[in-house]
Image 1: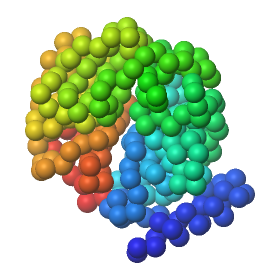
Image 2 (image 1 turned 180 degrees about the horizontal axis):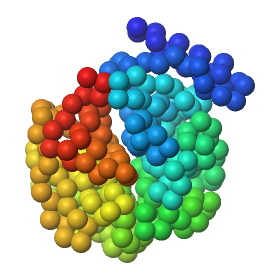
Image 3 (image 1 turned 90 degrees about the vertical axis):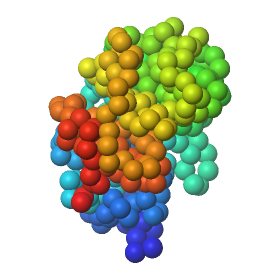
Image 4 (image 1 turned 135 degrees about the vertical axis):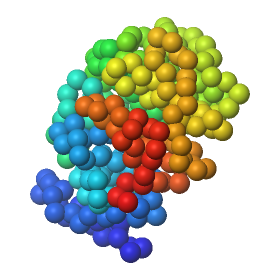
Length: 286
């Protein structure tokens, strides 16, 4: 099975030469972590029984059985995030193994094909962190040579200012397009003026992810404390999880139709699922 991902990639190249990734062989989610890095998760809004898994070697769609099908052209998918205003639209960036940054890319067919919308400021950029505001989906923030912002759905970009030190993740508010959250090696910070200034919300420990859902819930993973959640208005985080062992979570996706249904990816490449709001977890496909 060591050559399985290579076989998948070769199959996809042949498929995409005719414009489709259909027919690519499926691989188990547990095997994915042996061959690639996970860069993001999203519940498939056209089929909530499926999970989109963005990786360094393409975009996969997995079911509850843990089988993942490669659905995208072969490229990196850094900064992967869905457009909250359109269930078929997805955003990403990256730097494929062949060289060259992708700039800001988008798909309007649920991940099957991708187009560069803009190179970004001082680009082509490679946004390792990218987020779009549910409060105003025209507003996006990306991290590349500083904090960049777009106010026209990614068509044009400008540099706002420096990034918080040792940035790990970004998440835009669901309530105010000028509010963004930054997970860093030093904690969790918030900016209420579009990234011009920052204030600390959680300190004293690395925060490896931050995610904001459309209802205004802020999720974060605090190393040594676990997965926590708060309403945006309060920013008073309470712990959620058990059964995560020594995993550090890097990516999180909540089902827009069922907030108790949550998926996470760990630093080890494990993908876990919860059906009770993050209290208990099982590995996807088991």
